Amino acid sequence: MAKSDDAATAPAAGKGKLKMILLIVVALLLAIGVSVGATWYFMHSAQSKPVPAAETASNVKQPAIFEQMLPAFVANYNQNGRQRYLQVSISLLARNQADLDALKVHMPVIRNNLVMLFSGQSFDSLATPVGQEMLRQKVTASVQEVAQKELGKVVVEQALFTNFVLQ
Image 1 (tube, rainbow, N blue to C red):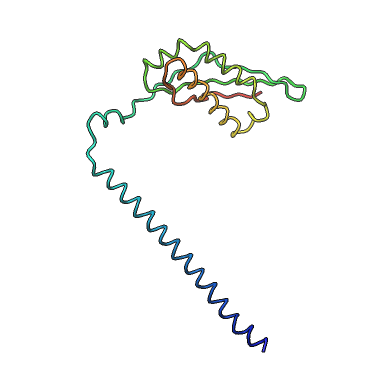
Image 2: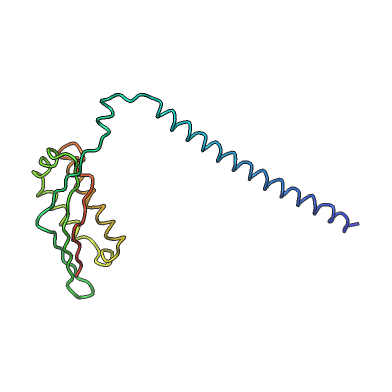
């Protein structure tokens, strides 16, 4: 009798699993449908609203202005008893010349912060593309921090490495 009871519960357990899988598939399809519908609704409702002319003009991105920081930065490192060097040239990307000119007054503070930042890096991390990108982001944040503190606005969108030499 035990064999017939096992045989009877096996198909029931299989049907239960099938129902659960179907329920999960239906729930996923419903979630995808709701997501697509909500995206469509919000995209079309945003397009149908009239935008004031003043708001349109402020959303237009100004052309990029690049300011090269001269001279290039040089930092030295002691790696396994050997002297190593980093030379990096930086250009700042901004959109407003007047703001950039106002930031130039604070260039000694910016350069000091960047020299300290470069000298505090690990030579091994600078040898990797990920380490270089992380450093570029730190440089951008450092410049933006000085601009925010001194001018009350960010001014610089990005700091770009135009030359990066490790030796």
